[in-house]
Length: 372
View 1 (cartoon, rainbow, N blue to C red):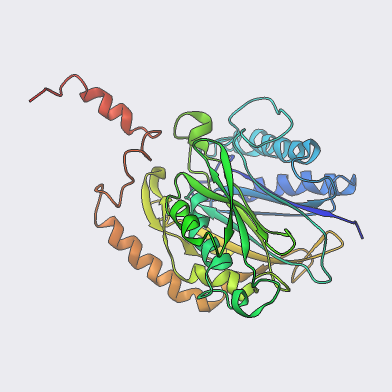
View 2 (view 1 turned 90 degrees about the horizontal axis):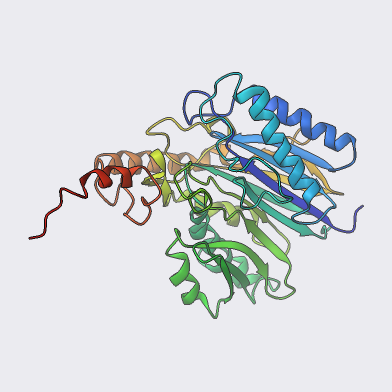
């Protein structure tokens, strides 16, 4: 058993079938071939390839630590190969969209793909939940992470589990300034909410257990528009959460998603919509390119291997009919928001639309505005 194991979840939109709809099966096939080769060569211990909507997700375990150029290089070259071998020949939509630069520089952060990584010492039992969302931004995790790790109304363990009772430390990133701040909860809870309530700017980057600084959760924080300087697709974030035995129970981690809260993204990355929890088979965005979707996959980590129901096939946690009502509520909210057309708050505010094509429309009118 390795002393420490790193879990790396790296995603990118490298082209989609029929608009921003869904990853093509051949894209998944090429990615699996690439990671299987890396597993045989000993670079990674295990892997699982999946998609959420039009995003190709690479989940890998290894002993290289966070941010290692070999692992990030593997992901980058996998995305490039999928683009060249599948996306471009099949003329899939937005082929290579998230690959914002041509040459790999050692770390995919800041290059387009989204990254969530944590290095852990395995517990006697190590359950993790891997989340992936489509048609939204990293701030989409703010509300559920607050509920999971800071709200006793959601997480009974904050009250009755001695290992959790002291609380958690939230590392919050200002994605505009590129700075982070650590906030200790519950004593700085109100300050935390003050920041997380502005999800377009302040996002949770990772969470630590206060008693021993053990990593509890880590999320991707890339804002593609801030990297590219223009709208190139929403960021479609990923998240890894450790569960049980001193961390929130699996049911406590999933519970906040029964409320389909509003997130930014949806059509053209320019609208507010409900985050709908779905199974892998339903992670296809169609209605107004949405509504925004989230999947949750459950694994056990054992000696670095991803243990699922059948080999490395995970437990598809949102396939539970207990989330049927959340899906119905999400569709009701989606219908309500669409009836507003292109009026705020259905459409995002001007600060969020700065990187879309709307400024080109306004530019045409600049000489026609007259002083009164």
